Length: 432
Image (tube, rainbow, N blue to C red; front, top):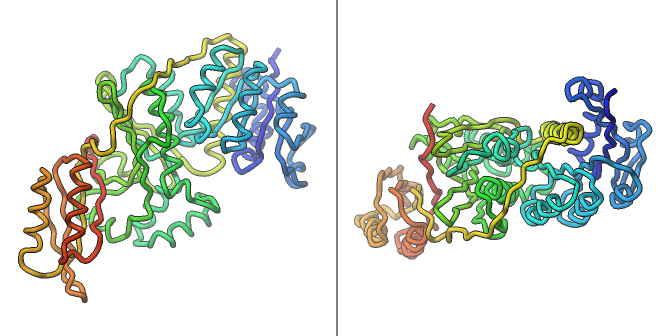
């Protein structure tokens, strides 16, 4: 006889509705493949309108998720409310009652994840969060289970489908940022308020989770250096193309002995690398380790259906553990120190607007040299109407602090027309 597990869904936004649809529509398919029935028993949302009720069968409806957790005899809870409060309290309530929890809440996990792991370890409720990072990419399960015996050295992630879609539109069709964002909204890849995406905060939350799982550390997303894509223009993207690079909003996590380098910012990566081929709303995570070598996971990262698919996958995983008593994998999260931003080491792309006058470039290179920054390439573009000449430079590896100090000096030169633009470069990827 097939075992029946009662499921409650808290939050009926885009992902919540898709999760409910998949649970109802694919009920028989889940039973056939997983050998267990995931019975949607109750839903909770402050505003359950008639359209949402129409898609339900005989499920109980609550306006308060806390009431649903308290009154229903749930085996599994799906938390898709978002934000920190009340979602955090709901998860704590469920875990304390022995209810297993699936969440897609990357902000909450990035800020309070270690407390949930500790609570899950002490109690009977377990926590799964595959949908929090990478949409349909099974990156969480890969790190926690498939690669549990592998020591990872670095993680590079294109983990925000909204920004990847925007940058793809800008690079492929020369669209300005605002136009590309408008198109992303129209296609459902961007929220009404895209701030968390385009400013890099969403990616920072996800990189916090990945770094914590991969390296067994406990860090705050507020400590992660974060830079968004608003400063990227079609002109910069074209410069990158001519230099043999693509630009991606890249999440980076690297281990250095007892310190880690975790950051999110636009990055030039080689056009011939596998990551550069990840376009549109797709995401990818590139893993490197001495035993593993290099490996990349790829899939859709934006949109309700792909995220809901990851939610269902976690529900099935927890259901299998409930019926077969499969041991869960837990981590001991330790405090560690992030590498200070000024100590980061990278190559750089620079774009300057210089007055067409002898000696200007020499003064720029002299400043860079004093800060121990070596130039790799220099490209001078045609003169503009205001006699300013665009100059593009790339550098060899240099410390971030030195680069920032040099740019401050360069921007003070009388013959430099605008504040210099710079983007970091990452080269450490296998070529296609």
